[in-house]
Structures are given as C-alpha cells and as structure tokens.
Length: 324
Image (cartoon, rainbow, N blue to C red; front, side, top):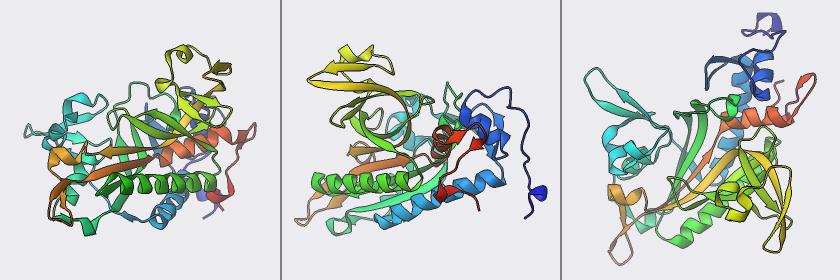
C-alpha cells in the first residue's frame, strides 16, 4: 500500500492532552489515537508493530511448552465471588445487564481458566502443563495518564501453569523466566528481574522492569545485581529518591525509575482450592493442584520501547518490530 493511501496520517503538532512521550510520539507518527483516558485505538502501523511483538511472545511461549487458547473477557460474577475478588479487586470493572445480572470484565483470567481445566478429571500423568492467551484486558485504573504504560484497556499475554508439586512449579517458573528474558531481548528491551510483592495473587512475585524516567515504579538495584521493588524494601530505604545511591546491609543500592513489562507469580493453591481443582496421584489420593501465572503486557512493551528508543526526529524501532 502507498503511504498516501494509509489510514492514519502523521500530525504536525503534539496532542495537547498527552504528557507521556510514548503517547505523543505514537500519536504524531500515526500509530495510535486516543479515544479517552487509558483507551487507545491502534491504526494500521500500530497494529503491525503490536502484531510483531505478540508474534515474538507467541513463538517463545510455544517453545517453552505453552499451548495457546482464547478465553472470554466477560466473566460470571459467581466465579469471582468464589475467589473473593468480586468485591476485593479494586480495579475490577463490573457490568450489569438489562436483566439485572452482574458480570466481571476481566483484568486477569484465573477465575476463567480454572473452571476450564476442571471440565475433566486430572491425573498426575496429566501434569504439568501450561495454557496461555494473548487478549485484551480491562482495569479500572485511577491514574491512566502514561500512554500505553498504564491503560484501562490493554493487550496482555497471560499463561497459567498447573502442577502436582512444588518442584514442578519451581522448574516451570524458572523456565518461564528464561523465556521472558528471550522475549525482551528480541524486542530490544533490557529488562531486570525484580523481586516484588505479589499483590492479590501471591505473597511475592518477580517483575520484569525496564529502566526509564517514564516508569511509575521505583526499583533498588544492588551492586551484585539484586533488584527489589520499592514496595518490599526495608523501611529505611523507603524514603530514598530515584537517582540516589544508598548503603544497606553491606550493599550499595542504586535507586531508579522503571516501567514494568511483565510479572510471574507462584499461586500455589490460591485459585485452585476455591474451585476444588484437584488431581489424583499415583496412590489414588485426591490432592490440590498447584498453579503459577505469568503475565506480559504487549501494548505496554510497545510503549516502553518508544520511551527508551527515540530521538528528536521520532521513534527508533528495534529491528525485530520495525515495519518494513
């Protein structure tokens, strides 16, 4: 197609309602258009870049043993009530039909994937396995002001793994961490593995963070490579500002701003137990299935690439996602 025929033209001026560099550059270059705060339309060029990122994700997930599926974004209220998250998940969009039925507009899919796996009895011989999807997610974010880095509607890859024991979960968890490292490298991102709080999912998690001034997270990086999210650092480090260096526990910690592009969690039985998801072991005992979940924001990755890779002339796309 000729550029003159392309839907979505470049803009001379920066959009007045955008602050984030990624939103400004992607909008001016004709890749996206803002429909409202936290919600963007992807124009033909933007779709092609997003598809390239997601294809890289898909290839590495398949290589690591994941099986691709696709689940609905609209969930029954009852599933979210079983896990207690219908009222406790603050960013959950709730939809009421004209029949007065309530639904959840999914920000994540534990409440959907567990009943899916539960449709047939599981044996220890069926485990482990992992299923994933690349899909649109919804979160009622109070601070949707960072372009593609924090959206109310966004693209994400989420994989869920199922295991008979901790050793299996640990092995799969590290396999996914390795796959994540390959994906970020292929997309031109230098992502740090950062220890963090697990939020509503688990006690602890591992985040993958890219250092950038546009990031909303603060991370502490030790001289030995250890990295912590500010949320789980000792109290004496909490007041430290980005750009400073602090000494603690015999280490020097560099304080930096960063953008999260992925995270992985060991869920254990947090979401399998409420649904009664079990398997039969080799002795005929019925035991709870252990789970892991692994998220990666493909649209957020697109925005992060722009934040770290541009000059005064515009976006500098890495080779793997460049439009040819």
